[in-house]
Image 1: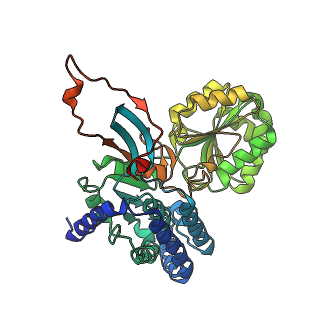
Image 2: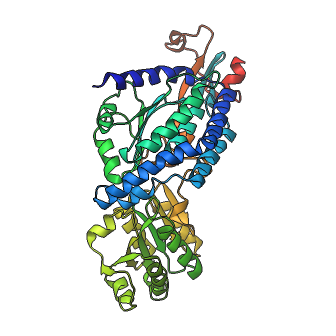
Image 3: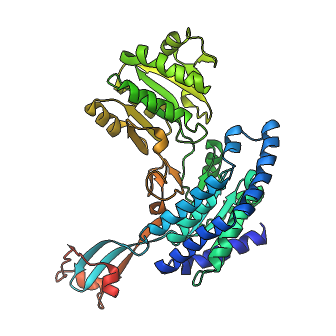
Length: 449
């Protein structure tokens, strides 16, 4: 194992201790400096990104990089503006560290406080998207977590340029520790990183389902993430036609290369004859290939579309296309739609289009996904759009964080017990003292202040 990697990880682990207790003002000063540095370093970042884009074009032509990954590489002024806006949003957030989550009097003079604290050292492994670096670095800094980054080789120049700009700025901010953020750059370092469970507390992978599954299968470190984004829109028999057309189109076409884009459209049989030809025309104009079950195929096959309309296979219901490809199925009831989603979906994001509140409520209650939408596009499942400033990833796990994960997914808690010479021996036996277990309205900060 590379000594350099171990040195970086040990340094980051050590830096995670003081970082956990940095004052809010110091963290916000560092974040403000990060936003300013990105703005003044546009030329450096965009120039580095051009190198990655040129290399990506060659890889796509050689069949060594998918078009969807290549699309996520580009960094321009608009993308840098978004990075800056995300950091500024994080500045506005209340410091999440040291918040009293609950307070309980166990007995007079014996008080228990549950307090939020950072997870520690987090490993972030991601493909393409260089904007992941400022997104996660800002959230980790504000939540007091040290971070090891490992980006894909396809974005190596962009990642290094952005990382260097941000880390130099952070470490030049008075009161911030050095070494809290590190960047790994070779493929071999991924496997080495996955072995460091003695140092790294959490791994957050962002990329294709194959990539995330590989991470989950090859480490003992807890993993926060999702292995695929097989998202559905169900158009109910009582759907408003205009809403159904708008949401179904946006969910697939607005940006098909991402995990919250729709992959399967389910349509109630009562509305299929009217809805499918209308949405089919819109999809055809956008260049969407349709893979239909028998009933939807019979409705759409004679419309003379430019793009292919083919019969769906069982595999299509399980496939995340990340492209302008959509599978379509007609169902006879909302129950059939829910059953299909829970069977074939990835528990990521699913939507219902209906004017029937009872049906919407049933869908929301029974669809086992991290985000469930009513009359809204699946593309809204995003940390920035959810008001988190940015996101560290989307989790379909049922652990401490689920769905688009912001700073709350980077926090855990500890218990602080304040006593006055109390001992357990006094609470056992025939003359045992009784616990009061009375809720308190004070915070640990107030108690210690």
